[in-house]
Structures are given as structure tokens and as C-alpha cells.
Amino acid sequence: MRKIVLYLSLSLVIFSCISTKKYEETAKSWEPEIKKLEELDKIESDPKDAILFIGSSSIRLWKNIREDMAPYPVIQRGYGGAKFSDLVFYTQRLVYPHQFRAVAIFVANDITGSVEDKTPQEVLEMYKTTTKIIRKKYKKQPIYFIAVTPTESRWKVWPQIQEVNRLISAYCNDHKNMYFIDTVSKYLGEDGQPIKAYFIGDKLHLTQKGYDVWAEIIKENLDKTLK
Image (cartoon, rainbow, N blue to C red):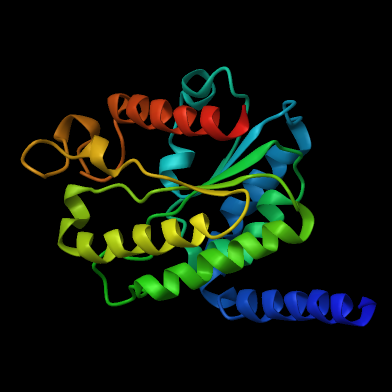
């Protein structure tokens, strides 16, 4: 039995190394951003029972995250236009220095309508890799994936993005202490289109009204699963 456990553990380590190595070259462009976040780790102390937020610019640009997420204390570690193809490479550096009650992930840039887009299945596999890296150190802390938001700027690829949400939701449902936070319906109007008031001029990032909606949904989900 010990040999089997050792084999499985070693296999996971090897798998993670292979998976992250694959994206190393494309991830390097974010190295300056990651180093800035690591500098914050040196001067900031983690709040007790914090929720660690990692992911792309919607996390980084959430200026009022501490007020909006109260009474939940937060650690904010979003960067630029994060994709899962670089997050899998940086997950250890973003997550391992911290003590937290749960981790929330929002990444929305792997499918944007460009020639470099990943398929929904590829995004799912990268999400799996990300969570497996987290689980190597944090065995029981809940992991939340915040649904990719419907946006006007990426509406032409919304069907593919919807499939990403569906695949990750199904994966979360099949794994203990892993949750999918569905936000989609709150950002669509009666006409089925993204609500303009929730997005700034780039039709991609959230206004404060948009963040207010986000915070309410996220806290509702945390209340259900953490209390």
C-alpha cells in the first residue's frame, strides 16, 4: 500500500512538472507582474481565515475588494491578462506562500476570439492542473472557480466560453471541496445581452456596479459552503 501511495504521489509531481513546463515560455512575459506580487508577500501579512483571490485583471482591478467582500478578509493576487496557460506555471508562487481559508480563481482570457485561443477542453485540463498543484500543499481548503462572465467584447465566442463554464462546473461537482460560482445570469439583461451598466468602456472589465453584483454572488456562495 505504501508503494502505491508513493507511486501516485510521484506521478502527480511528475505530471505537474510536465504540465507547467509546457507553458513556461509563454508565461515568462508575466514574470515582472509575479515578482511585484511576491514583493507584497514580504510586506503584507495574511489575514486570519482569508479568502485568497487569484487570476486575471478583474481580480487585480478590484479596488474595493476588501470592503466589498467584508466580512470575509481577502488576499488579492490577480495580475494582468492572466490565462490558465500561464497561471499553471505560477500557481505555486502565487498560492504556496499564503495561509487561507479558501481560494477563489477567476481566469477569463484563454478564449477571446484570437488565433491563440484554447479549446474548452484544453481550458478544463489546465484548470485541473492548477487545482492539483494547489492540492499538493492544501489538502482540504475549498477551491472556488468564479464563472467566466459574459461580455460584449467577447460575445462572438460566448458559446465556447459557456462550454468552459459547463465543463468546469461539472468537474467541481465531482470533486470534494471544489465549487463553481455561477454568476452568468446576473450579468445578462432581459434581451439576453450583457448589461452595459456593469462594464466599463472596454466592454470587458467591471464597473463598481458590476463588482457589487460579483461580491454579492461570491459571498452568498461562501456563506453556503463555509458556514
